[in-house]
Every structure is written in C-alpha cells, then in structure tokens.
Image (cartoon, rainbow, N blue to C red; front, side, top):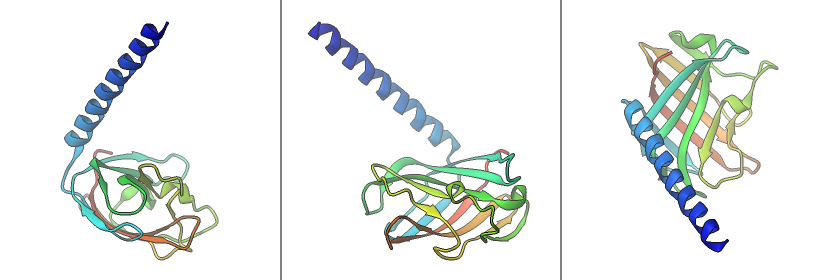
Length: 163
C-alpha cells in the first residue's frame, strides 16, 4: 500500500510540474510591452507581463487580467503573481476616474500575491484610481488596500491584449 501511495504522489508531482511548465509557456507567449511599478507595502518593477482581456457582461467594462511570466518578490509576504482591473466603458479610448457609484465591485481590482491571505483590492476609499486608454494602451494608477492600514500604490502601462 505504501508503494502505491508513493507512486501516486510521484505521479501527481510530475503532473503538477508539467502543468506549471505549460502555464509559464502560455504566459511567456502572451508577454508584451507592459510594465508595472509598485510602491508602499510592495516595492518593485516588472516588465514580463502577460495580459488577457474580456468583456464583463454585468458591468459592460473590459476586464483585464495581468500575470507576471515568473512570479517576482517585491517585498511583503510573497511573490507578486499578477493583478486584475476593469476599464469602464468597454475599454474605449478615454480617461476614467474610478469612483464608488454604489455599484462598484472592488473584487474586479485585485492583486495576487503568493501565500498572502490579506485580499488586496482597490476601492476609491483607499485612494484615487485613474485609467487612461489610448491606442491599445492603458495607463493605470490604483491604490490597493487590505484589512490593515498598509497600501500598495500601483502604476502600470498595460498593452491591452486581444478582446
């Protein structure tokens, strides 16, 4: 019975490693000219960013998911894996000041940090949020918060992917 359990664990480890390699290759394929800089609770800059976009049927906005090709340690509790945000108006060119209009979904704006259970998200009460879209690029400035008083200030220049 021990041999069977050990073989199952070894097989699972191989499958997990293969899946991880496929996922990384996918992120590397989608990496473009996007960059992000974080300061505050996290500090650093990354430029290997894989971007995917999709229409949010509920809000009408453009949901943007950004992943680092290789998670990168910026300080704090773990490596930065990525973040997501939404561009109102379907992502058309323009300047968007993010305000709480009563329908604001903070979970549409979050940061993914390996091993962190804080639940970092953007909400206008944490600080200003602005997204400027022009010619397929989004200039994004957001302030993220969690349960404590710490803040993460993010500025990204994101090349919007296929829509």
